Structures are given as structure tokens and as C-alpha cells.
Length: 80
Image (cartoon, rainbow, N blue to C red):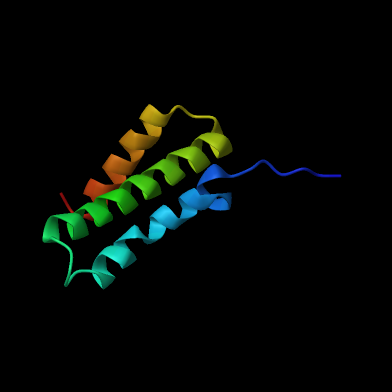
């Protein structure tokens, strides 16, 4: 019997952090703009944490190298 490891960022309440920007946009008319922008920051941190978690689990590479790779890819794709 195969037992799967619990994915904290997808199998728990933390997965709803990925939708924080949707809540921020839905409440844009009643929230200060800074909170709407913060909701995008929260989602960005969630996506970054998920990418690092999945990358480390898949390749057993330290998170520093993954962060460097993400930074390099972002600037390469942006044409900088």
C-alpha cells in the first residue's frame, strides 16, 4: 500500500492563501489600497514557498539555488 506524504501547502487550510488576491480584489471598494496590494504579496509568498517546497522535494537541491534560478528565469524572461 502506497502512503502519500501530506502536502502542507495544498492539503491544509494554507492552500486558501493562494486565493488571497481574489479576496483583496473583491473587497477593493471597501479596503484600503494597501491591503489589496498586501493580498498580492501574500499570494506571491505562497507561490514562492510552494515552488521551493516542490523543488526541494523533487530534486533535493538547497533552496538558495532554487531562489537563484527563479530570479535568473524572471530576469531572463523579462528581457533584462
